[in-house]
Length: 189
Image (cartoon, rainbow, N blue to C red):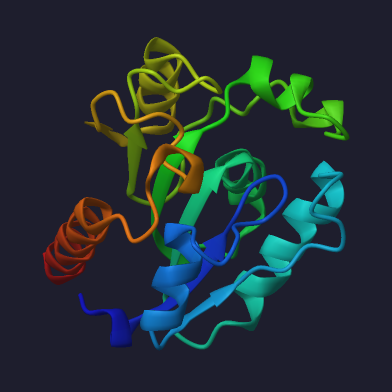
């Protein structure tokens, strides 16, 4: 599967992803990518954030691949049961925020916790760091197991954001390309 074959939705977390964040950089380079905009990036509201994602998926004209970071991963997990069957063909989930983190984020809607634990209805890859202040690696492993995601150990790389030195994040771009290739192989099989 190639990027031109899918609509790519970028789902940032709390405070959005700034101009140097890898999500923003990828969005500017991937012609079929667009950001799911939220009414308030400082006060994530579960109903509003998941509703915006469900609406964005419904408006896509091609199969959808999601790229989520941090609280955006929680948004995907909560919204997944509401997507039309077969609409989303894959999710690239990066540095998820744990249940502890989502309730500690200032302005965060406590309804984001607990995180859903049902398997996601589409293939997914979860990239997690071993020293992410917002999610213990073991918690990320549990999420991946519950959601049926392939877990990728990114090593000790922090929250995989601009603050941890992940502006362009070429390793992530290569991993995303591999993920798309795997989705194509699944679709062809």
